[in-house]
Length: 401
Image (cartoon, helix red, strand yellow):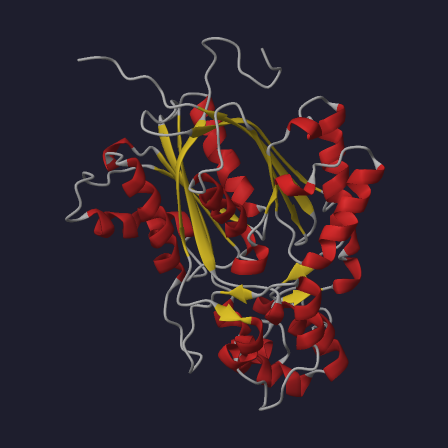
């Protein structure tokens, strides 16, 4: 028996069905600024350099040509969650836990999980899936690794027997924070070089989308499932400063937060509301991600030569080369033909990325029983790394009537 397989009769958790939702038609790299808008009528000089570096060819925005929002975050989440539930055919009264992740919800409070729970009740009307009842909710807040945090919470709840079924949904809608109008007041207030370096950078990195996964204590009787062998999520905030953030400006002085300004308008004018990335710190993310991967190799929990599908969330093609180099030098390289990514066609969808990738893999026809799937999700918010290990299992046998 593989050391990753649970002992006979031990509880196990399975990812049985997935879903995803990407708003509107794909937007190619040349049209990205057209959709987001010109800041004060001028093209961004940083755009071409960032797009060339990240390698993103197409992405999705929940915006129209007038920079008007076409979908809310809840719309994206219900699109992905509804697809997973319909594929499963699950009686909604059996849903014990709803766990969500996002960087920024439609509302500052309450969390996305509560809002999605309410939205599910309306979505279920008229569908042959029963009615939504009370359930546990968990809203994970963060950046890319918060999707792993939501999935980890659901995994633990099922593993100890709290529930039989949990729905995990991660959704991101950064485009409404990346529109030109968000930047114009701040650009007048800041020096242009600083603006270009830490705020404009993310305009060409992020995109919109949602992914969902249904976890159960038994594999699906109708198709392949992924047994979740383990989840690991570790923060390195004790050792490194904030790298990606919103709610504070380099000019804010003693103000620790956008909430410390006398008015919201003053916070916006000072650039405190912009998404920012301290690009000088980004090299740490590759080192930490590879370091965590190698620790799991040393512990015998990952066997690189036996990985059949490696889903690595890297936010830019720029990072792929250094990851490959470090894994090769350490003797733990996963052959590149086994890597699975959607960065180039879907863009960087943040915490939703890993669930959207899992949905693509689950529906690709490439899975077979016994295969191993490893997911790696490094996050640059304040530096954390999520790792997950799955084993593909055959449909559960059904009892004869």
